[in-house]
Amino acid sequence: MSEASLVKTICGYCGTGCGLIVEVKDNKIMKIRGDKEATVNKGQTCVKGAFAYEYVHAKNRLTSPLIRKAGQLVETTWEEAYEFIAEKLTGIKTKWGSNAISMFACARSTNESNFITQKFMRTVIHSNNIDGCNRT
Figure (tube, rainbow, N blue to C red):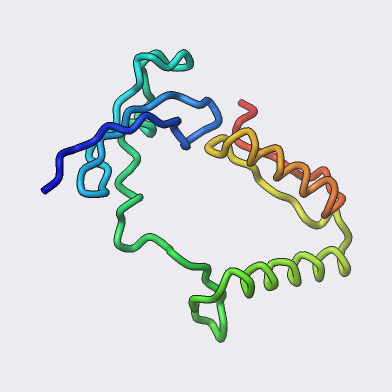
């Protein structure tokens, strides 16, 4: 068995950017703690940042896109999934107009992800119907 290594990183759970120290052994996350040298969180973490990492190694985690065909979810390629999404969005926009489409952004996402989400809605879909849970 290999010895555990410590990896400095930034928490990906929300857009705050807390510094973390991740203990990795045999390519598996064993423990996470706050980085005391990080100016954002000074070693403190929320419950999610410190303990919500088991999903990374979950056996039932999705590893490829799924599309419902004949009532069943089946694995597909990313290309087919993106084409499916584009066709559905185009169909809704054509039939009902841009304001029939809305998007929900998430505080768990990075600022960059939220920025591109709103940019996509405004420039591609031509809708301002975007909301998120980070406005409380």
